[in-house]
Image (tube, rainbow, N blue to C red; front, side, top):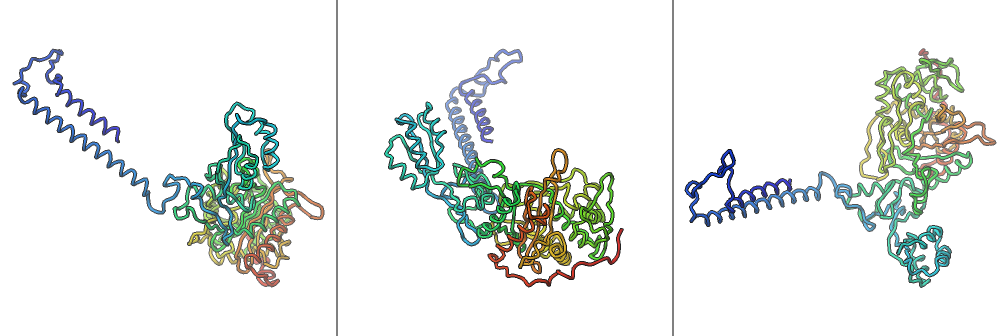
Length: 593
């Protein structure tokens, strides 16, 4: 815009200056190109009026320039105002284009005020290579007094042709004083505050980390750079994490990963009434205080939110709730599971089937693939897809960290895909998505957006009725008392849930020796307060344990987690028996073939 105005003004000025210099106007040229002789009378300009004419042209030129500059500055002012004020809502770091400085980055505290991330005084150590008298001696001394000092890199740099090099970042004040005692004029110290995480790796995947320039690179730290409000700057940011719960969950998960020689594991605990994430663990993890960007892909990968997995029979909870909610089946309806069923060229079997008609609840309790496939096919394809979409299992989830991904969905939605997805194959979702949908199954039917930052109003939407939710609570409690999660029955806190054991797909198809085991649950069963999902990746068979399915590894692990965290969360032990323990299982009422 400004360039166009400038060109327009320039053209006007050039034309007027041409008249002043007596240049020939185009109208005075013959078509052949010869100049027409013209007298002063023909030009309409008296020689005596030339001076007045020049004054008029100058005056017009000045006014034109004034108006042009006024227009330019008006446009610039409007643009600056737009950048400063922005649109509706609070000004964010992203909108204002102003990155957080080290001083502005807020402290992060857990829901009880325990410090999770802060700034500390730190120093960077450099060296004037020209003043180093003995490289080997200098490197040896620094290696002895500074843990983590890279002596190989330092030796290489100090023997280079560079004048100045940086040897180590993030020295503590004590290390700074120690280096000063050397009195070596070649060593230079520069103050550079750094981000510090008092609990080390304990909540690394949730908190994330910053780079050497103090800009967020992962987790909540990345979110702060792009969304923090001015009121949060240079203050504290409370998050939903409970570091006590996080410690307990991580400790139990690490113990089971070692016990079963698993390649990894994940666990999340969420408040079913508002979506607050109290704990999120993904192992292996990393220490954000120690150059985390060098930790490697496996440690930086957040299984809880970035990984997508076929969760197996956990999906039967969603399939059962769908038919109950839509009225495609009632709790008393039964489905024949005595024989395998074929859909196209695909045969569906039950590894440990009851081989009898089962109710909707019994299909979940005894984990029948045959029954679950029939449930899925009892509704229209668009109803099935729409229900999964309503539960947030089709789209990318929302959370205040960047490590999120879309689920992996089947390319088609035919009978085979619908049948296999009913028991958790052919559709891969993140543990976070499964937990959010699972919480809605037992909290009365409302699905809350998960959150790490506790704003005033939780965002919830009803996805199933209170009646359907009541049925699902009884069904999932019966999984513990009568089904595949009996190892959780011993808990004093009345756990309910659903197990999942899925073979992991490889280049040659599904490998029965590589399993993903999971347990989606909640407690206490009569009035769930907290939901959880726990996953073990490739657990191995061990002596003294009968099998490798979820009931033998991840269910005992989940029970140990609940036993540790329930008292921290104010949940009292519940009396044995009572809710759903003996009166749930409804035997054959009518048979639906």
